[in-house]
Amino acid sequence: MAENNSLLACRGICKQFGGIPVLKSVDLDIGPGEVHALMGENGAGKSTVIKIITGVYAMDEGQIFIDGAPAAIACRQDARERGISVIYQELSLFPALDVTENVFIGQELSRYGLTRKKEMRRRVRALIDKYGFDLDPAAVVGSMGMAQRQMVEILKALSMDARLIIMDEPTASLSASETEKLFETIDSLRKKGTSILYISHRLEEIYRLADRLTVMRDGENVGVLTRDEITPQKVTAMMIGHELKEDKNRERRHRFEGNRLEVKGLWYKDLLRDVSFTAYGGEILGIGGLVGSGRTELIRCVYGAARPSRGEIALNGRPVSRSVGKNIKAGFGLVPEDRRGEGFVPLLSIEKNLAAASYDRLASFGFVSRKKEVAFATEAIRSYDIRPPVRQLPVGNLSGGNQQKVVLGRWLSRKPRVLLLDEPTAGVDVGVKHELYHYMRALALSGSIVVMVSSDLEELTRVSDRILVMYGGRFFEEFEHEKATQSAVLLAASGQHTGEGAAL
Image (cartoon, rainbow, N blue to C red; front, side):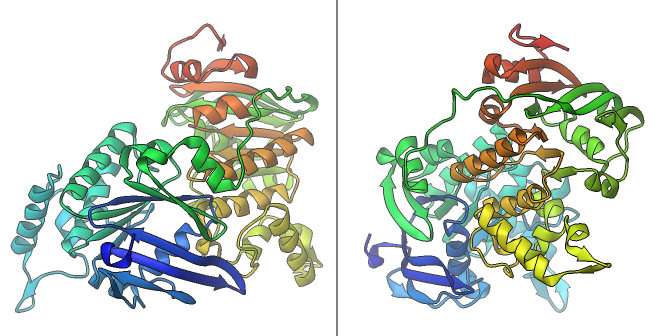
């Protein structure tokens, strides 16, 4: 698409961090009223492109055109003035404020020093009516579901006359019904001429929404597909550079009876009720269930981050401590569901985050050896292919998949006896997923116990040797790998015995 036919056109965009190129002459075109999807493995450069378009990063080389004219975007305000807004996965709303207050935060209307609340509410109501949103301008945001909060973010963008709204993984926290509401909102925006740059790892969403799709790999634009050209095989091959081979017929791993985690009669608040199970070294034990079934609370109790009111937890016959610090020394590791809030410190470097759980092994006489720390981080970055491979780069600057590699690499480098993972591949692309599966399998094969909580039914049934399904705070049904199907696991998670597994 020529620059003068595009709302936004990027030409030859280049960017380096620490001498490592992360964008290599990237082109991107978005037409007026177009929903343009952007896909690529984590680390492909999608986030960096967004940050250059929105003025967070300065490009090293290249040009940006808006309506065919060169545009200098040096800061966020420059982007906003040119009609470009972004909605990140982590929403920037204030839960205690109402819809109107959130929309006008930082740009309140006033006269003679007094805030014009009625006028602000009138303008918000006009936008709601124009785009057909199901919102009340006076409703407190904290009382809303995630889909409505997304609409508030979109309203903020529209209130600033946004012509291009960038959405980064917008459905990551949405239910199926909330996702459909968001799609209806996007359709409404498209009909009224607003352009959308839609970043997602979910191909079914791309089929539903996108007019065109740009695929990135290793900092480069590797192709643009129209809606009719998009197929799973084609997109996956473009993203990872080769066709993906599934590991469907793998042999069952050998169970190491000598490494055994036992949980008996565990109770926690009203979320866990008399939960018992055994996990063995050499296997990946999958834990399925719906949101609220108690899965996260269970592994946090095992790790020591939550304290059960009753029950016993033992590793190889020895009671497990209720102290996280002691459990880490005993060989436990946890990859939490909220990786950004609990898994790493965004402002600290890759090096510091990787070493955070291993300072006891890197210290001599109470002092951390700088030489050991550098060597430790360098080896972990190489082993887990963390990109870009810059030790001093803050982890908050990495893509979601590479952030997860840092969190996982921190524990794998300790060779844990028990690794607990809560939604380990949420929000990462297909290529990184398979890398994470490889690391998990290798750890299990070494004799460690791997327990994985996942809402991804395909992941559960393909990766797990056994699956325990929770319902109402208890284990409801158990499946061996050979008998586990996605439909059976989903039925069990809904409280219906399938006959394919063992009732518990």
